[in-house]
Image (cartoon, rainbow, N blue to C red; front, side, top):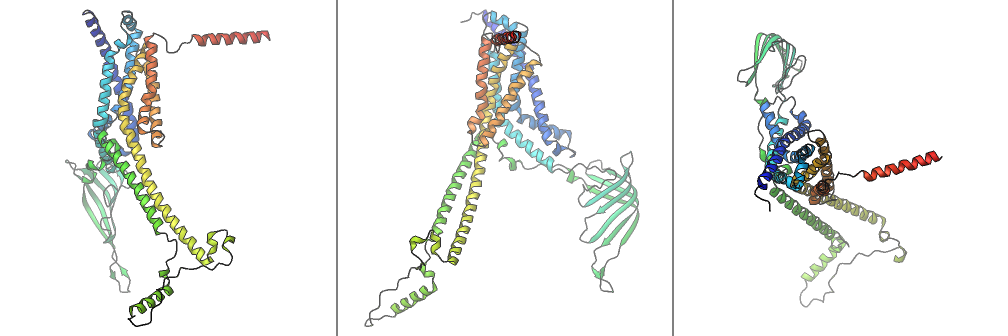
Length: 528
């Protein structure tokens, strides 16, 4: 038990380590978040470019995206900051002073352990509650942006069809941005009545109203050309219509800009996706998928049994017209029989079809050879049709089962990955802390290099295990937990080396081996 005088000193150590950790952690987290945001923005930049979205909508989308990638940015921030803190303490010999005073490395890292556990819990909360909601908002806003029409931009010499049923071309724009020259407009709003409707003007002005609701074009010194569809007969019997040309000094056209405004989509249409579900919802989804798989397999078995029952092993004699007539005559005779009439013969039973063979049965190599050629061909065709139908049913059911199996595997992996990312936050502390104590380097240089190596290893394991889960090689649980299971022994090894004040790898044996090889080569070369 520690004395009362030791407790304030231990609290000072905890305060020193904790304050040294928080600054690098915030900076590292911000850097990791920025890099990941840029990576995701690169994927969606084509969907956002040229849509004229405001800076507020862009910040809203980035905010939703940031929350969704918190669980991925937290582990790398813990790793970098722990390497930096312990590296700084070791580089300034503060760590050695604490150890010489009898304070172990685990005791020095106690406050960091508490913080890393809290960060892991926060990562789990983000994954289970905040990320699904942020993903839902992000996907719905991204969908709104994707279906948003491009921003109105009328350029020189370019045919613009942003306005519905109108095509606009401006030959030249003056520097004021409003005065335009050599204007051409094609009106397609009356194609059913007019074959041609065009407007050409020498000059004009274009501007947007102050409230931003309308776009106005005032054209000067131009003409409007119209050619109606032919609806009446000429004197020679052919159809025709007059060509109309109307000159004007001033012509004004107003377009509403409501079609360029972004509308909000109902978010309920996206709630069924995996990234928008909590752990509870994912478990329900997995249960429903496995239940549907069982139902699909049951339905397939029932369909196959029904198919087998429909197969006729022998032709029904009652379908033969001759046999039907014989049975009908026999039934009439028995219906008209009266007492005193001669006794009736035995009831007529349908005769089974008999096949007269050309040679003994033992001499046939196949069962089909016992049938006549036309009958054999009909049987083969019926069998082929039945096989194709059965194959189509099996393939359809198999595709449905395979789709649900893959969805269940992906959903299961995403479920357990929420736990895995939280656990890795703690594991990375036990990797970064010992690494900083061993390498004795602080700052953002060497620690970031070491952290990137371990984080890239973690990401590679995560991607590989996800593929293995989707290929059914690993269960979703082990696929999600494998990165943590692989890195846990590494953290234990580094912690053991740091507790014993040993280098990460001893080079003494390697130096002795290199010296022996050098002496052997010198002896061989000099001896020769």
